[in-house]
Amino acid sequence: MLAERPEPGELVYVERRGDSYTWCRAGVGTVVTGPDAGDPLPDAWVYYGGRWPDEPDRMPAFFDDLLAEMEAAAGGEDRCRWSLDDPWPHGH
Image (tube, rainbow, N blue to C red; front, side, top):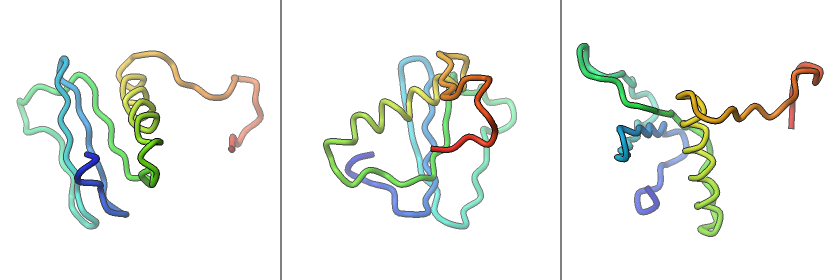
């Protein structure tokens, strides 16, 4: 992924099956489809369409966060960033 950085507007898909990870990217206007009917689903997956860090020293933290978000969506550690009593809407 580092050698083939996605361009702005591209969508990146990362999946984990056991201990193996794969990824692909789709350009602007490309229709992204899921697995073929009957194919097993991956253990965890995430789509990312945001900006990639420009500084190489920020990449490890970026990938750690992306993979942690993927695992949280698959039933891993809860990554909720706001307590339940915070007023809506949330913002940074």
